[in-house]
Amino acid sequence: MVRLTEHSYRTKADVPPTNGNLPPELLDLVFQFLPRRPPSYGFRRSALQIESWGISRVCKSWYGPATRAIYETIETSTFATTVKLSKTLEKSTHLRSLVRTLLLPTRGKRCPPQVIRVHLQILSLLEPLDEVRVAIPYTSALENDLPAELIKHGETLTALCVHRLGPNMTQAFPIMAPNFQQLRFLNLEGLRLDGRVLSTLPLPPPLPHLRVVAFTYWNVAQALDSWLVTCPNLMEFRFFKLILNNLSTLSVFSERKITRLAFLSCLYWPKHTGEWFTVVFANVCHFECSTRIFCVAWTYLPLVLDQLTLELSRRHVVGLDVLGSIESYLNLATINSLALLVEEHNPWFLMNQRDLLQLCKGKTSNFKVVYLLCQCSASQTGTGSFLTAPWKRTVNKFKELTSKDASEVMLWESASNPFDYLMC
Image (cartoon, rainbow, N blue to C red; front, side):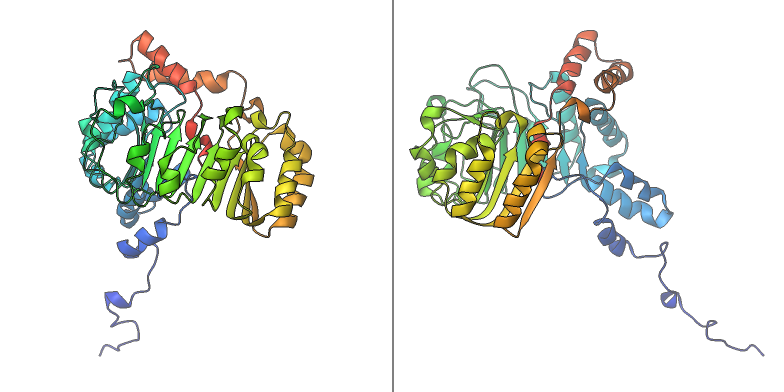
């Protein structure tokens, strides 16, 4: 006679869960907490760190959920990795539907045609995306179309950064297609627009969900003013790496409540400082700026801010009374949250760190320091080989590039990444 024990009649459902038999739905949730890269401003998703990719090889039951987590957000930073991604998607068709956010590399100079071609090829392979950063071909002011590879994703896109640095000529406004109605974040990177040319063209349709517009390298807010004012939920402007001009004439500041404003890595014309700050800051409660802008504009800032962020770049502190300006403003204002964006090896910050931190901590309880990527020689691992090694690998790996094309890609690859300062 067989004696039944406590364990002899257990069903499969009674078996305690282990790493190897967790439900895929639970693994999907767990993998969302893996270490990720710093997010780019405006994009909700950020890519997993490369060190986390090995989870797909832990066991068979982890492969599916881990692959979904890895490919949900893809971010490449070099031409080599972008080409690898293109070839992977071309061969492994089952991966195409997993990608929801695609962040392709751009630089602070015109993108070579060879790089743009790979960008567009990747867009053509993927199913409709939610978020995209991509370089698109240069077009003249009379061409109002976007590449078909990008328009394909228009109906589902919620965040879009288009990079189009070209010659010193007026370019077309790229959002002419009527199917970008879900956009909430738009970054126009490197576009030069002429309001006189745009006035002869039909206005793009208003974007009902658009909340944030960023301008990088060129301030085209004036040229787009008549369109921006039609977007009912627009509330944030971000200006990055450009020269500010008079913004007080923009209708969007008087007809739309711009509550969030950022002037990062920006310069200004002295004749435009003063009264126009009063108009621009009328409704602002979140403000980010470089120290050069702050030292000029602090007397015009609202005395109550929810968030103040100051960028302490080594290029923007020479000849300025930064500590005095910050102290004078904080003595008058009420700031709920204060943040400093600091380059890791900024000599001014290292010299004044103690006094600055003591001042800021004494004025607000919610204070933090965010260290930015630094471009100084101390941040590089080695001299010379740090830059030349990636170039040699690019030339040796892609034999289809001619020597002229390879040189152009090398120069582009060595330029700075405009998103180093857009980390949030």
